[in-house]
Amino acid sequence: MKYKNYYEILNINRKSTRDEIRNSFRKLAKKYHPDTNKTPEAESMFKDINEAYDVLTNDEKRRKYDRQVAKYGYGIVDTDSSLSNVKYEFKSGVNVINDLLNTILGFKKDDAQNFGDINNAPSSKDERKTKQKPEKGKDIISNIEVSLEEGFFGTEKKIAIKSYKTGLNTFSVNIPIGIQNGDCIRLAALGNPGKNGGKNGDLIIHVKLIPDNEYKISGINLKKDIFISPAFAVVGGKYKIKLFEETIFVSLPKHLKDGEIIKVEKKGYISEDEIRGDLLLKVHIKMPDDISEREEKLYEQILKMERKKMASEYFIHQSFFMLSSLKYVHIFYFLLL
Image 1 (cartoon, helix red, strand yellow):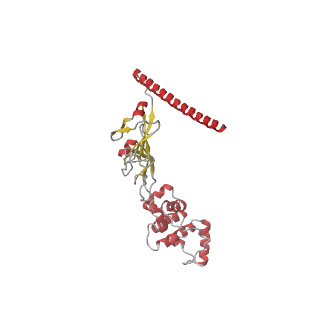
Image 2 (cartoon, rainbow, N blue to C red):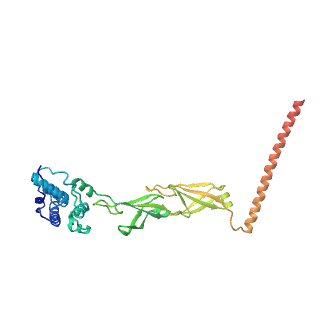
């Protein structure tokens, strides 16, 4: 069995020291590394260089190699697998430097910087694809508060976003007409930067509608509580309502009851396609805080009228009951006869 001439491969002689072997290997590894040398023989030569270095820098392997070469001579044939355990996996970037310089050449970690662009060059097609595959940046999630009136008209608001990569940034956010609580606004490419040339992530803003003092939102309808006096509940009339865009007067019917709902069509909230909802008014009958002497006398008169009405109804009820009773007495008397 013949062996490769490792001394010739590394451009050294049989008396070369470990330092001389290392220096020669360093030059040849840089020269023939497939990342920087695209010639057809580079990959094969790089394997031989690694194999030779692995054997000649190990005292036991080197002695065994020298004995077997003396016996069989040199030649381009398969080598004894027991002499070398180098795995020829061409890694890229920092892995190449760590493997070649730290493990084989004995460089310090910082020395890897001297290789420049070699550190960033993938060494195989598969790893080149993996390393260079674009990766989209992570999205940034934030919140923004919007008043009901701002949601009704639509507006533009400023939002400050702090990112650990880009620092504090301020963006303008367009709030569309008819925005709802919990809606999301996505601003493309305003998130964290991508990797390997990938696109930036997005800025996703969750909308929170601030509770309004006057109105509650239900879909595209608005709900409002109104408080009227007993007199207003009885006689009805015009009730003033201030909306976001105008002031209107709603005609309340007579004889309203507490808790009754009055619907005013197309005076509510608005949808994104500008369809108007309804305004729902809930009636609450409330006594006035201050009652004048004249108003009190009027209430006394009303109370007297209510008592007379109640007495009249009671008399009619009793009369009917008595007549009904006499009728049944006559029938019973007739049956006895």
